[in-house]
Length: 112
Image 1 (spheres, rainbow, N blue to C red):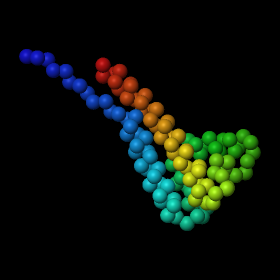
Image 2 (cartoon, helix red, strand yellow):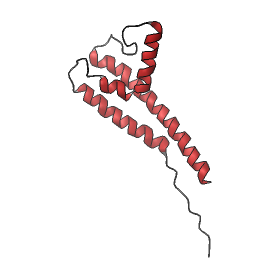
Image 3 (tube, rainbow, N blue to C red):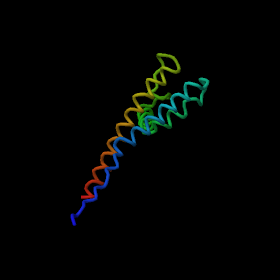
Image 4 (tube, helix red, strand yellow):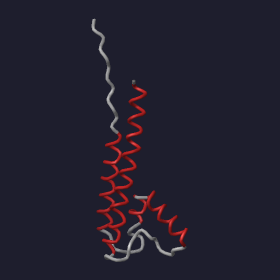
């Protein structure tokens, strides 16, 4: 009888976490584009990129700004929010990729 080695599959969270996040971010931005530009339309966007939002709020508090610094006021309502949201979502996706990579490595070490 030959002994068979059972190979456990790598969870590949480094791919699934950012992919799922970017899909949800795209849906959130699409819904934002479909809303009226009022005071609460961007709440979903700032929640979706909460780590970046918190950094922006901290930066504004440190320098004493009365408005949110990371959303510009140059290109019009929707483009201003796109300039903030798209790079922020990509940054959060990068952080999720790194987090998933660390989990994948920990699982691989534990399996061996």
